[in-house]
Each structure stands twice: as C-alpha cells, then as structure tokens.
Amino acid sequence: MIWVITAMGAPGPHWATGEGFRVLDVTKLLCRPEEVAGGLRAGRAVGHGDRFAEVKRPVVVWNVTRRCNLHCQHCYASAQSVPHPDELSPGEGLALIRELARCQVPALILSGGDPLLRPDLLELIRCAAEHGIHPALSTNGTLIDAAGARDLRAAGVGYLGVSVDGIGRLHDRFRGLRGAWEQALRGLRHCREAGLTVGLRFTLSRVTLPHLPGVLDLMEAEQVHRGYVSHLVSVGRAQGLAGCALSPGETRAAVETVLDRAESLDARHVPLHLVTGNSDADGVLLYLRARERRPATAGLVLDLLERRGGNSAGRSIANVDDRGEVHPDQFWPHHSLGNVRARPFGEIWSDPAQPLLARLRSRRSHIHGRCAACPFLDICGGGSRVRAEALTGDLWASDPACYLTDGELGLAAASEESSHAPARPTDAGSAPAPLPERASLVSRC
Image (cartoon, rainbow, N blue to C red; front, side, top):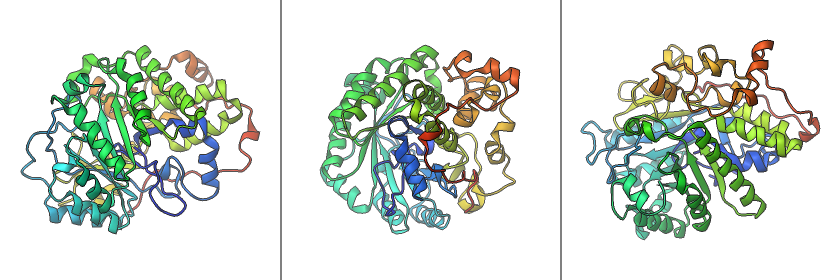
C-alpha cells in the first residue's frame, strides 16, 4: 500500500500495508480529490505520498524471510516452513537499512513469508525508525499477541496490514490452517488496541469474490484505517490459480462494488479508506465514474491519476528479497537487478545501464497491442508487465486483466486520430490553482 508523509513529517494513516505504491486510493481520488490537490499546492504529499513528490525515492518492500507458518494458495513469494539457508544475516539486514537511509528511502515495508518469524525483526524496525525510514509490516496476523503488538508499536511500526481471504472457513482453506481466521482477527485487534494503525487486505479470485461484500463489512466493523482489495497476480504459488482468475465482467463488478462502498463510507463519514491494487485499469474506471457522476472535479481527478502514472514497478517501488536480490517490485522474483551483498542498493537502483529498469522507466515506447493504443495509457502505465509476461509470455503485451471495453476507452477514435490524449471535461473551474510540475520517474540515491 501507499505511504504518506504529512506536513510534520510523521507517518499518516495512508502508509503502506505491504504492497508498496501499487494501490489506488479510491476514497481520496473519487470522493475528495481537492484534498490531494490542496496538499500538492501547499508543498506536502497527501494520499498518494511520494507518487506526486518532486524526487521519486522508492518505497522498498523487503521480504525479510521466506519462512511462514501458513501455506497460502496465492503466495507470490512461495513461502516455506523454514527460512532459506542464504537469508540475509542480522548484520547484513542492518547494513541494508543504513544503505536505504542513505538513499533517502521514505518507507520500508517488512514482509515475508511472515516477518514475525524473523528473530531480529524488532531490531530491524528500530533501526529503520532511528534512521528516518517509516517501517510498516505485512503479516498474516496469526502470530501477534497483546504483548507482541505493544512491542511492535514501541519499536516504531507505523502501519500493520493483515491479509484475509474471505470469512471464516474460506480464509482457513486458502491459508492452509484451521483456525487461521480467528487468529488473524485476534492479532488485528491486539494491534488496534495497542494503538497501531491497521488495515485489512483481500485478494480477488473466483473463489473469494462472493465474500467481497462481507469483507468490506468486516473492514468497517473492525474499524481499520485502510481496506485494500487486490487483484490476483499470477506469480509464485498463484500460478496454480489461473482457473480462479475473474472474468472481465466479474472484475468490473467487483471494482464497482468497491467504488460504491467508498462513496457510501465517505457519505457516512466513516474513517475507512478503500484502495485497490495490482490492476491499474481501476484508475480509468474511477475517472469514468467521476466524469459521469462528479463532473465538477473530473478534470482534477484525471490530472491526479496521470501524475500518479499507474503501475510503478521499477520506478517508485522496489523489492529486496530474503537473500538480498533486488527486483522491480515484489511480483518479479524471477528478474533480479543485482544483489545487495555484491553492490549497494543505491547503485543497483540508479544504474542507467540496467536494461530492465531502463525499459520499465520508458515503458511507453516498448508496450504494444491494445495498451499501446489506449488513450488512457498515462493513467494506467500499461498495467502490470509481470502479469502480461506470466499470462502471455510477452513482457510488453497488453495487460490481460484490463476489463474496460474498446468503446468506453475510445480506442477506435484514438486510432483514427493517432492520439494518446483522452478528452478532458470542460471543468477548468474545478482546480483554482495550478499543481506542481510532474516528478521525474527515476529516483537517484
């Protein structure tokens, strides 16, 4: 998820739950885009954090261990019951954090496996906080008791996200452990009672889709700060769930449900932010809804979405795995950019000669097919490259998860006019002051 640095520099409730800059803040962009724009004009990041900042420093997801007490069917990291024998040592972990601080990385998301199974986790959290990096935790929640939750807060955790895959038995089945559902909720509640900012994450599939309304109800009932609905990415063990992927119609209906709920929560002044992730077509659908239902702010929404830029792999999100391999994000375990044992993270990330990073940062010139012709390419960034590779064998093919129709995208008109710019609504009065210039896509450590 996405972190934000408030005007005072402290971690706000919009920091990540473990998925980095892959999410779309539905509540902010659909219901309150003026707050995002106002923060930009005031010179602070709001809602989407460094996605709009002058210098793009990557949020780093560090899979601190592959060890996990569960065996989730959709685990992108293919976590195991034992740690990898070549896992970064405690000393190497601290050295990595110091290097990330040197690179002015704003946030470090500690994931796994389950990070709570790494013995030196609290020391790593404290080190990050002491070096000015906001630490977040992505966990299954089952290992957290009341004392552990207090320890996490005292160490400096700014945000903790717990994953659920449905209500009750369905969650247990997906997670491979009877009782995982109750344990996860108990851990979540301990964290909330300890004063941690908490969130729930839910992954869409054909099996879990019927539980979406109930999970959204759960997010509200548990008074979490952030509810994250993620699209399935077919990497790791999720490669075995190809038959569970949603159809375009099912996907669209699910996203419409999230948009409806976000509007309802905002109207009722419920302080729950809904976000979606891993399908940047959601941003286009959000804009189309704003254009239809909220025309006064639709132009501002479009500008903010274009500034966000869609998929951020290799740009404002980076991943380091348990053995020190650096990846464009956590869904690219099969593509290493280098290892922090051999070369500092900053050199790896800012190397202009790294071919995959160079292509990801200039993806418009490499993407082909339907995505290349889409007039909303600046909003989605071409979607997920790793999904395209996994499902088509072509890294630069169109994202197979796009559920929007040619008609609503205006692809025929765009083709005839050879234009990549979507028509903007005539609502110039909705943005009374200009926003800052757009940021460079490439971070320099």
